[in-house]
Image (cartoon, rainbow, N blue to C red; front, side, top):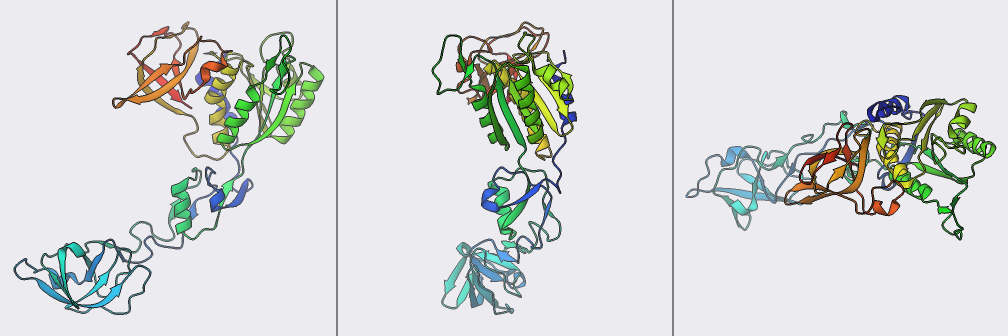
Length: 407
């Protein structure tokens, strides 16, 4: 039985990130949200593109104003008006100024902007009573970014700000990694689909719905293979198809030590390397991880809480790493105050579902209500965090600190 840390290391070491040449597709910017940038972006444009004003005011020569005083203002002739988007035509000479608006291009000869609130306008003249700072309120060409250097690094997730930067750089499309393909199926004669009428002993399969939703949230393309009966030949056929058509295969159920748990045998018969079949964690101990030349296989426990906890803990980092994300594959860990009493047997790294919330300026964790049972799917409602109790610890009392994983 592997520790959680060793299991995670085994998985991440087996992940082959997508190739930034072979696994790239170009998408329109408006379709690029939450996609991962495949290669660094370099722009031929400077930001700002030209010297421009950061204020509404007057473009002036600093040399004309360095001796301005409240009782002896400097009077300048206003020779041009420069709104945003206008190309100045006049070069500012000594004793001259240009009316300029925010974003307006600085005219030749001017090196400073005086904000309009510190001036007094009289027809074609402007009176300035206080000397500005040299270069004040001027945004110089290339101050924010210099053309030819890296604008955005590869391996980052594109969100609104990055897409805005790409648009400002004149990009209509962007190269992103393709979405990893994830095949999902559930094992068990007792499982039925939601639309079927339940018979005694049957269970509605919720796992494939939960897992498909998570995979799509994490940027994967989902291949749903439905429910597979506990039959070795059928199971082997489905796994063979899945590993040939997906980058990652996830099954739930069939990985324990029961007489009808055929996953491990099927993987080995298809040439898979089974790295481990149990992890020192609760819930989620009966977790199988195997590799094929071009595919990773995760055999998750059938109980819904176990399936989701192992998915959050192990599959999310694997997908993010495979998808080309350069860092931050896993969730976020916090040390917070527990508002609940949390218990463990001390023999397993224990994960307890609950809510992370902010109150009075600090974060707190509240365990989900109901029984602490890996089959209690209802307890997962509104869950946004998992409290982590390490091996050897049996109790976290209310008010004590606990490490929390936010998937």
